[in-house]
Image (cartoon, rainbow, N blue to C red):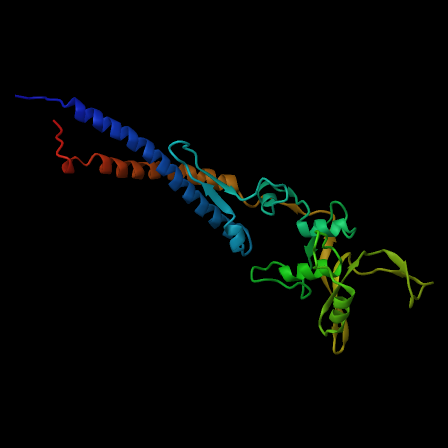
Length: 269
């Protein structure tokens, strides 16, 4: 004989817990998937960028989902700004002027759309990631009197300039515009000199054997970027691949925890 009995209270409690487990598992899967996406975005950066700095890698951040707001997101810090340095690599197109270039533009060294490009060779001091050293940017802005923020004391003064000139091997930066002419002493053609150096910022070094000049930054009409960092593609591919397994894993965990009847003396008939 088959005997069927029911325990309505236990069934209701179980269904309620399953429903809660479903919500909790959904939020957990969202957050775990967002973490997976963040890790894959960093991995993609290391593939497409040349020695990305920790600052660049850590610019990928996420917002966690909650049961009150079941939405998780992954984004690049301040990437909504048109001046963000990663943005051209995601969307392609022309790069807007950087803060350094805007400061040069303010004092008339750069045109409205011109940008700077590091010159090859020993004139550029590079950090461990291959970028132009921040200290060299500061030296250039200081010597060219480009610092303009209120209270700034970084611009070179006549006294500090005099001290720097006396030092051997200390770089002195100057701006050139190829093809421009000016009148000056020592000219071989009626006092008029035509600049033959490539347009940009050059460094003159005083040595024990005389002096030498090296290019540091060249001027370019614009800097066009190709789309090399598929931020959205990486996110979508990872989400499609990881959300399902993360949800199943979280659901199993919550159900095993909430419906562990062996510890509560409940029976199923």
